[in-house]
View (cartoon, rainbow, N blue to C red):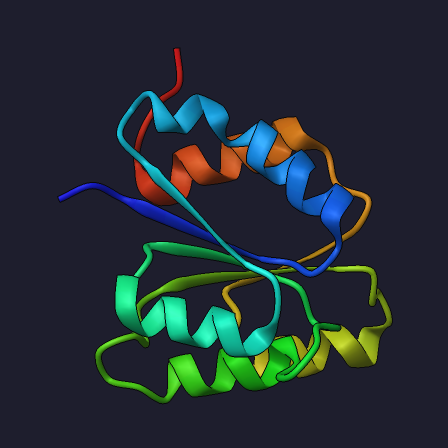
Length: 128
């Protein structure tokens, strides 16, 4: 079964940057899924059961904190690795992120190379 990464991001440029950064994983059979709002992120997560989600906090319809809580409270989805990727860098926001169940919390701007290394580690795959 192929591995899946879900990018839940409403900002077009960030979405493109992540998609481009993760293109190297597609040749290894990793599916890259995109959700443009929190509602879509939840629907895709339930349907596709991704291995890893990069989740923005400030999104239309349902915010990232609520998406994360819903996924972590679902017995079938609670093991999905969730990384918040957000502009919200205050201590309070990070605390809220971990309380909602996130595995990691990163603030934008981010280094694409760091993200690639994280994906390799989390999905246990290596890009040549």
